[in-house]
Image 1 (cartoon, rainbow, N blue to C red):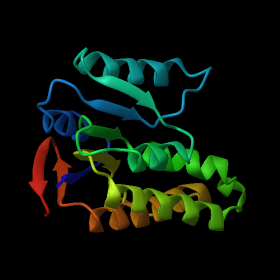
Image 2: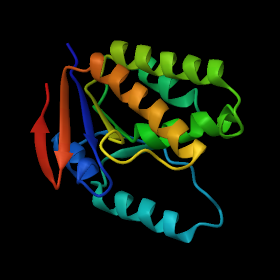
Image 3: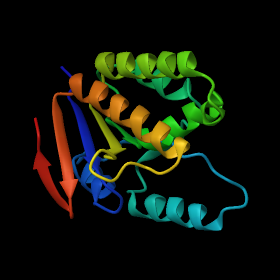
Length: 179
Protein backbone atom coordinates (compact mmCIF):
# COMPACT_ATOMS: atom_id res chain seq x y z
CA UNK A 1 0.00 0.00 0.00
CA UNK A 2 1.24 3.47 -0.80
CA UNK A 3 1.79 6.13 1.79
CA UNK A 4 0.64 9.75 1.54
CA UNK A 5 2.31 12.52 3.55
CA UNK A 6 1.20 16.16 3.73
CA UNK A 7 3.89 18.66 4.80
CA UNK A 8 2.52 22.06 5.82
CA UNK A 9 4.38 25.16 6.92
CA UNK A 10 4.57 28.90 6.69
CA UNK A 11 6.83 30.89 4.40
CA UNK A 12 10.50 29.94 4.82
CA UNK A 13 9.62 27.27 7.39
CA UNK A 14 11.71 24.56 5.71
CA UNK A 15 8.72 22.59 4.43
CA UNK A 16 10.15 21.87 0.96
CA UNK A 17 13.55 20.76 2.22
CA UNK A 18 11.89 18.56 4.87
CA UNK A 19 9.62 16.97 2.25
CA UNK A 20 12.60 16.29 0.00
CA UNK A 21 14.41 14.63 2.92
CA UNK A 22 11.52 12.20 3.42
CA UNK A 23 12.35 10.52 0.12
CA UNK A 24 15.56 8.51 0.13
CA UNK A 25 14.95 6.69 -3.13
CA UNK A 26 17.41 7.56 -5.91
CA UNK A 27 14.63 8.27 -8.42
CA UNK A 28 11.75 10.57 -7.52
CA UNK A 29 9.20 12.36 -9.68
CA UNK A 30 9.24 15.98 -8.55
CA UNK A 31 6.05 17.77 -9.57
CA UNK A 32 6.57 21.53 -9.75
CA UNK A 33 3.25 23.36 -9.65
CA UNK A 34 4.44 26.96 -9.87
CA UNK A 35 3.65 28.94 -12.96
CA UNK A 36 6.54 30.74 -14.62
CA UNK A 37 6.13 34.45 -15.19
CA UNK A 38 8.21 35.88 -18.06
CA UNK A 39 8.93 39.22 -16.38
CA UNK A 40 9.74 37.98 -12.87
CA UNK A 41 13.46 37.22 -12.47
CA UNK A 42 13.08 36.91 -8.68
CA UNK A 43 10.58 34.07 -9.14
CA UNK A 44 12.89 32.41 -11.66
CA UNK A 45 15.74 32.63 -9.12
CA UNK A 46 13.59 30.98 -6.44
CA UNK A 47 12.69 28.15 -8.82
CA UNK A 48 16.38 27.74 -9.72
CA UNK A 49 17.29 27.34 -6.03
CA UNK A 50 14.77 24.51 -5.69
CA UNK A 51 16.08 22.83 -8.84
CA UNK A 52 19.71 23.08 -7.69
CA UNK A 53 18.88 21.45 -4.35
CA UNK A 54 17.37 18.32 -5.92
CA UNK A 55 19.43 15.25 -6.87
CA UNK A 56 20.21 14.91 -10.57
CA UNK A 57 18.39 11.57 -10.66
CA UNK A 58 15.06 13.18 -9.81
CA UNK A 59 12.73 13.74 -12.75
CA UNK A 60 10.89 17.09 -12.81
CA UNK A 61 7.39 17.44 -14.22
CA UNK A 62 5.65 20.80 -14.42
CA UNK A 63 1.95 20.65 -13.58
CA UNK A 64 0.81 24.24 -13.15
CA UNK A 65 -2.44 23.97 -15.11
CA UNK A 66 -5.43 22.83 -13.01
CA UNK A 67 -6.15 19.43 -14.63
CA UNK A 68 -2.49 18.39 -14.88
CA UNK A 69 -1.84 17.41 -11.27
CA UNK A 70 -4.93 15.23 -10.68
CA UNK A 71 -4.37 13.46 -14.01
CA UNK A 72 -0.74 12.74 -13.14
CA UNK A 73 -1.60 11.34 -9.69
CA UNK A 74 -4.49 9.24 -11.02
CA UNK A 75 -2.25 7.61 -13.63
CA UNK A 76 0.27 6.26 -11.09
CA UNK A 77 1.05 2.60 -10.48
CA UNK A 78 2.36 0.92 -7.31
CA UNK A 79 5.78 0.33 -8.87
CA UNK A 80 6.21 3.99 -9.92
CA UNK A 81 8.88 6.09 -8.21
CA UNK A 82 7.73 8.23 -5.30
CA UNK A 83 6.14 11.57 -6.16
CA UNK A 84 6.84 14.86 -4.43
CA UNK A 85 4.40 17.70 -5.20
CA UNK A 86 5.73 21.16 -4.38
CA UNK A 87 3.35 22.76 -3.74
CA UNK A 88 -0.43 22.77 -3.46
CA UNK A 89 -0.65 26.50 -2.77
CA UNK A 90 0.93 27.42 -6.11
CA UNK A 91 -1.28 24.82 -7.81
CA UNK A 92 -4.30 26.55 -6.23
CA UNK A 93 -3.15 29.92 -7.59
CA UNK A 94 -3.29 28.33 -11.06
CA UNK A 95 -6.80 27.05 -10.34
CA UNK A 96 -7.94 30.49 -9.19
CA UNK A 97 -6.34 32.10 -12.27
CA UNK A 98 -7.95 29.55 -14.58
CA UNK A 99 -11.39 30.08 -12.99
CA UNK A 100 -10.97 33.89 -13.06
CA UNK A 101 -11.79 33.77 -9.35
CA UNK A 102 -9.91 36.98 -8.62
CA UNK A 103 -12.77 38.78 -10.37
CA UNK A 104 -15.41 36.93 -8.34
CA UNK A 105 -16.05 34.08 -10.79
CA UNK A 106 -15.59 30.35 -10.93
CA UNK A 107 -16.66 28.89 -7.59
CA UNK A 108 -18.02 25.76 -9.30
CA UNK A 109 -14.82 25.32 -11.33
CA UNK A 110 -12.66 25.76 -8.23
CA UNK A 111 -14.64 23.16 -6.31
CA UNK A 112 -14.50 20.74 -9.25
CA UNK A 113 -10.70 21.05 -9.52
CA UNK A 114 -10.26 20.66 -5.76
CA UNK A 115 -12.57 17.62 -5.73
CA UNK A 116 -10.51 16.07 -8.54
CA UNK A 117 -7.27 16.73 -6.70
CA UNK A 118 -8.48 15.31 -3.38
CA UNK A 119 -9.80 12.21 -5.16
CA UNK A 120 -6.52 11.73 -7.02
CA UNK A 121 -4.50 12.07 -3.80
CA UNK A 122 -6.74 9.50 -2.09
CA UNK A 123 -6.29 6.99 -4.91
CA UNK A 124 -2.64 7.66 -5.83
CA UNK A 125 -0.86 4.31 -5.95
CA UNK A 126 2.71 5.60 -5.64
CA UNK A 127 4.38 6.93 -2.47
CA UNK A 128 3.26 10.57 -2.34
CA UNK A 129 4.60 13.60 -0.46
CA UNK A 130 2.70 16.86 -0.82
CA UNK A 131 3.93 20.30 0.28
CA UNK A 132 1.58 23.18 1.04
CA UNK A 133 1.57 26.53 2.78
CA UNK A 134 -0.21 26.85 6.11
CA UNK A 135 -2.12 30.13 5.97
CA UNK A 136 -4.43 29.75 8.95
CA UNK A 137 -2.06 31.08 11.59
CA UNK A 138 -1.81 34.70 10.47
CA UNK A 139 -3.94 37.77 10.40
CA UNK A 140 -7.01 38.09 8.22
CA UNK A 141 -5.84 39.38 4.84
CA UNK A 142 -6.89 42.95 4.12
CA UNK A 143 -7.79 42.31 0.47
CA UNK A 144 -10.58 40.28 -1.09
CA UNK A 145 -8.08 38.28 -3.15
CA UNK A 146 -6.00 37.51 -0.06
CA UNK A 147 -9.06 36.27 1.81
CA UNK A 148 -10.18 34.24 -1.22
CA UNK A 149 -6.81 32.53 -1.44
CA UNK A 150 -6.56 31.92 2.32
CA UNK A 151 -10.09 30.49 2.52
CA UNK A 152 -9.68 28.16 -0.46
CA UNK A 153 -6.21 27.01 0.61
CA UNK A 154 -7.37 26.35 4.16
CA UNK A 155 -10.20 24.22 2.84
CA UNK A 156 -7.93 22.42 0.35
CA UNK A 157 -5.35 21.67 3.06
CA UNK A 158 -7.99 20.25 5.40
CA UNK A 159 -9.47 18.05 2.69
CA UNK A 160 -6.07 16.73 1.58
CA UNK A 161 -5.05 16.10 5.21
CA UNK A 162 -8.14 13.91 5.60
CA UNK A 163 -6.89 11.51 2.90
CA UNK A 164 -3.22 11.48 3.94
CA UNK A 165 -1.68 8.87 6.22
CA UNK A 166 0.74 11.34 7.76
CA UNK A 167 0.53 15.11 8.32
CA UNK A 168 3.55 17.16 9.43
CA UNK A 169 3.69 20.88 10.28
CA UNK A 170 7.05 22.67 9.98
CA UNK A 171 7.65 25.57 12.37
CA UNK A 172 11.04 27.31 12.32
CA UNK A 173 12.50 24.27 10.57
CA UNK A 174 11.23 21.87 13.22
CA UNK A 175 8.79 19.15 12.09
CA UNK A 176 5.77 18.57 14.31
CA UNK A 177 3.95 15.35 13.52
CA UNK A 178 0.20 15.98 13.58
CA UNK A 179 -0.74 12.49 12.39
